[in-house]
Image 1 (cartoon, rainbow, N blue to C red):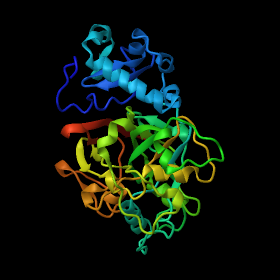
Image 2: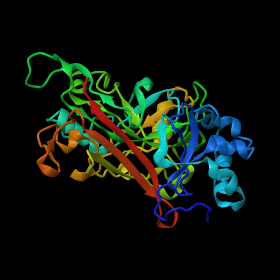
Image 3: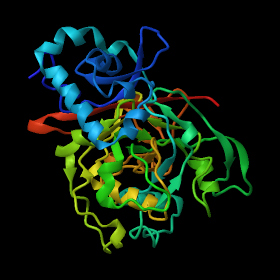
Image 4: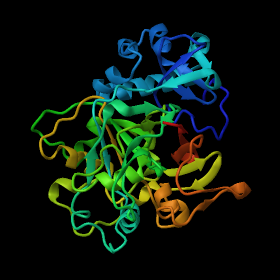
Length: 401
């Protein structure tokens, strides 16, 4: 029960309580907020008026101090917010600090320390291999032995809603005799799920899969924008560079791991059995239902539960060589793609490398993105008693370079 008037089907109910950063009324000050129903609770103000012990962690305009505080504090903050919103004695105190969700501007919720992107969907890896290397029939020989990833550019991780400028770079189509330079003609998206690190680790000390929840604060949505023509020319032998590093968009709300208990599932069977450091004793696959919309039209519904490598395995692999975690590290799943055509998380797959244009309402077709196109990725997860947990949207509009 709550003293708030919440719709039964709200994606931001008391079982969710994600965290983000917002401003309101044109004011430049950035506040920590928790969306609940159709409002955002100004958590910075709420903690101050209730004299919460953790109030100083919420004054920086970013989540990093809270992220670094660790699981005990995360549990304390979550329990306090639930109490404030369910106990009538707090109603008069907190109502002035509820801001209509439609009136807030959201910002990047945390300062990104490092960004790593993985390649953990077997369906996507098979599709991409066939498109980029038409003679390929199998996964790369290392793919089922380790979570493949690349180290991205933290400085170009941007908030949802930030325009995406079409990148320039070198391209060389298969039928061209020499490379050329110019704006990407094969601009794409990758619908992904991201994990935000709170507690750092010590250099030289790997983080085991069992310690995943001791370090990772929560989950967001990611769009890893990709220039496929630039990528195809540059990626051998060292992997993605300029084809990826121009923009990565993240959703405004970070859903804490505690909100996803009902979404946890077993990951797919893994064969061969992973090395010991990659073995897990807990269910950390997540039953998230993603949706990808282009200019308002639903074009794909990727299922995250099909990912071959789970987040604890990715974190363990990321640190097994002794690399340390830092507060604000972001690591993403890689493109989420299911076995069906309407579950593919990139236009590379949806148009099969541009060979099969995607048909949209009104006779419009797309292979890759055109200037002015808006892409919106959303997701929900199971909550208690048949409810759904919402993640909000990660959106971006392509503008000319």
